[in-house]
View 1 (tube, rainbow, N blue to C red):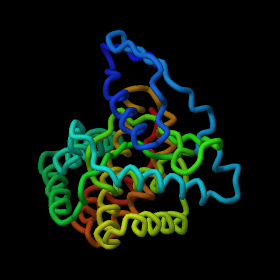
View 2 (view 1 turned 45 degrees about the horizontal axis):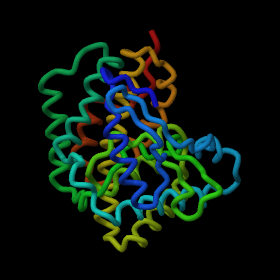
View 3 (view 1 turned 90 degrees about the vertical axis):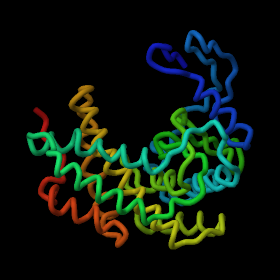
View 4 (view 1 turned 135 degrees about the vertical axis):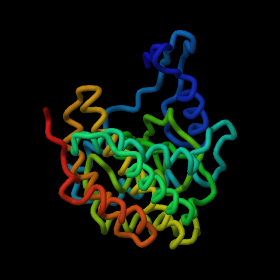
Amino acid sequence: MDAPPSQEDVRPFVAVARHLLNLGLSAPKILGQDIVGGFLLMEDLGDKKLNDLLPMTDNEEPFYERAIDVLCALHERPPPAWLAPYDEKLLLTETDFLIDWYWPAVTGASVTNPTRKAYHDAWAEVMSKVELGPPVTVLRDYHADNLMWLPNRGGVAAIGLLDFQDALAGSPAYDMVSLLEDARRDVSDDLAEKMIKRYVSARNINSSSFREAYSVLGAQRNSKIVGIFTRLWKRDGKATYLELIPRVWRLLDQDLNQPILAPVRVWFDRYLPKHLRLQPQRS
């Protein structure tokens, strides 16, 4: 890893990698490091990304089962004390990506202060009602494109973990959403339901509360992603991310149908109706 210190700090990656390895999970081992220079010599976990392997199999279930088991193992242990909280304040702040970037891209104007306030109020009302659960280590980008298949390892070690340097201490439902409401590939409703049941059963937690948190964090994450993908296009010139936005909107619409999200759904129906939920046009 070559991470220029002026742009990145390798220390969070190293700290989280050590935590994961101590739990028996397959993060890359750190073989050498120059923290000041921003260089890490790491174990190579190969090139078998789940995102590449899954289209070639007739049965995705065993791969997702293993990925769920990794989350179960990770969530059995409390998060390290040095992880910052992924709390309601940060979750609410992240929803602004949608109105700060996507909104002007499809309406041609900045969001007005009254509309912004209505958006914030709707999200705050929802967050005040949901039980996010006891905090666990949240890797935040836990999806098929960041998971490696390691066929020579057994159990939870068969899943190689990448891109976890932004880990925080937050809801157990968040990484489940990352995995099963994947912006890059379709996960069938049937498979997602099986994996939720597998997680709930393995951890012996309240299914209703977990599913509410899953829906709320699904809506939060997907709102954020719509905004981030728009920013990657507008600010960074990465227009290919626009092609992923329709899938994210489908997922977000699905989340908004849940009763607990009624205040946010009302806001979307009034201010950002379905004809505006689309792939922004390149210009």
